Image (cartoon, rainbow, N blue to C red):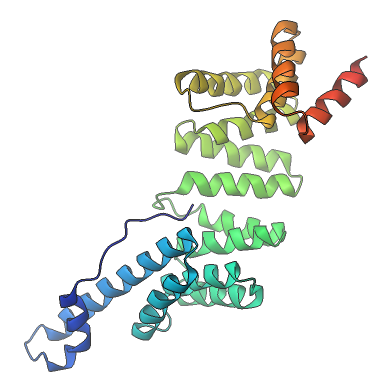
Length: 265
């Protein structure tokens, strides 16, 4: 989930930061601030990319440079939280995330990082709070994924209705991303709303037919089986069940299907 264009910081930018005190023109203060912000942004973007690649040492180098320029930069502090998290330093990670948000409470990406950290620690209620607040930022470019994460979190809390609401918003904002369609279908099945579940599931299978690189997961097969069974579509149920058995015989979903079948019998 970590992405971004890697920008090389130019020598002129670095020299402008280092030698800013030598500039005496009327606009020197504004030029220095602009160069500082540009350098900070580049360092944070580079560090984020390196974390995504698993190159923590390189990430630290750029974060150290960013924090030398601004010790309270919310972007750098958030990515440092990711670094600590990857190293298993969970107390330091949380402190860094919290420090980032204290510096800038409106830094949505940092709030999403913090929510993901809390989710990984199985602190689902706290994660829900962070994701829910992040969804309020209507200008955030990855808002659909935030709603999807909120849905996952509410699902862990057994809040089926809240999860369905979040997944529905993810579907709407992503214009029908496959993961969101499947998640919403599953929650609608749990609610007993099979008509709507079938509609979203059909959108998913249509997308799969159009994209040969997409394939069924155990979850999508079980969801399809449950929908087919509800509508007494025995042929479709049998074909999906056979695919589940052949492709994922060791999956939890196949075990659930066997239990489902035995209950019916």
